[in-house]
Figure 1 (cartoon, rainbow, N blue to C red):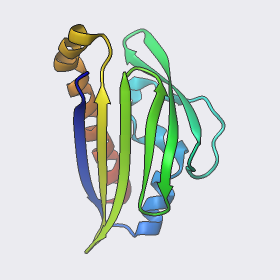
Figure 2: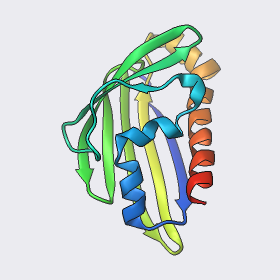
Figure 3: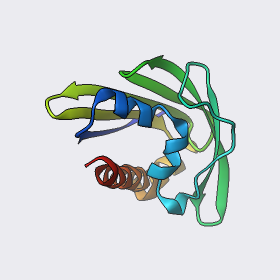
Figure 4: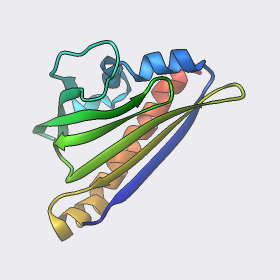
Amino acid sequence: MKIYKLEAKQILPIGKTECWKFFSDPKNLQSITPPDMNFEIKSDLPEKVYPGQIIIYRIKIFPGIKISWITEITEVIEEDFFIDEQRFGPYKFWHHQHRFREIPGGIEVHDLVHYAVPFGKIGRIIHRMIISEKLSRIFQYRRKILDTKFG
């Protein structure tokens, strides 16, 4: 199984508490996801993430194809980081670290995603042709939205 890595960093001119309040509220995920993914949260959500929390989404992965994506919040250190892992969904493996570090002038938001795609060699070809670019585009969209909201 090939494990891919995606890393994104962004500096936001806000305090750690404001940053945590935004990122730890799962309801805000929809606002930073590209509209063409038709992202819908299907589970009831509290105001902030907690270890063991299961979140159910529906997303459009290709035109005309929507699937459920179920993640679990596996670890949380308030105001520092949280981790979500896929339990069922489009990837064979998904582990996403969300880290928040105070720096002069704001917060560095650091996403580190390790993931694997299904379908062996065919999946790796699809990754090269579509998935890698799509994931990069999602994080570029997110950067733009966060710059507008907090910048």
